[in-house]
Image (cartoon, rainbow, N blue to C red; front, side):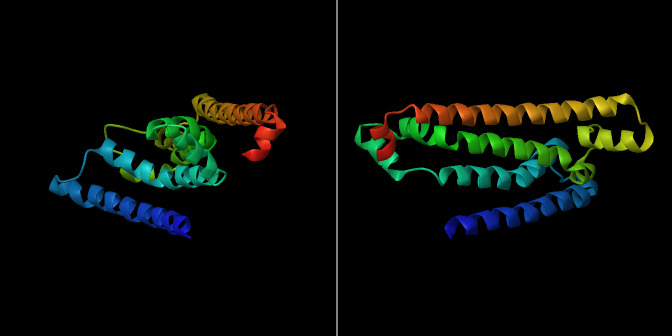
Length: 180
């Protein structure tokens, strides 16, 4: 129940912070109190992407056996060692998939990038959007193919990682895998 409340508040907080940043960028432009455009853009993308990373990481932590943490601590592992050897291998697939989700959501947020852009800097989604409207060249097809290729390679690496992890757990002796 607590995790659902945190996830809901993360989504709600994201909208509030994004609205505040957009308002400060629009209202503060004349008053010279607006934060730097790159900072506002970075925070806005982070606010939108954070719930995706949080939810995928939380889903991967659902499979954590508390006995693993207790056994590592009882064998003398410190907090950093438990984090590195117990938690990190379990949440790594969730972090990777969350990063892929965050990247795809951030690239897809053309409207937010249009509102948060500055005259001196244009982001890739805004450039692609304006080029599709006014200057259709093969560059758009190449950049789109590159983005799809990066996403496909990331997905394949994730699948290979999961398959490798599953095959290594199947090779454990039966008594060890039955106890964990």
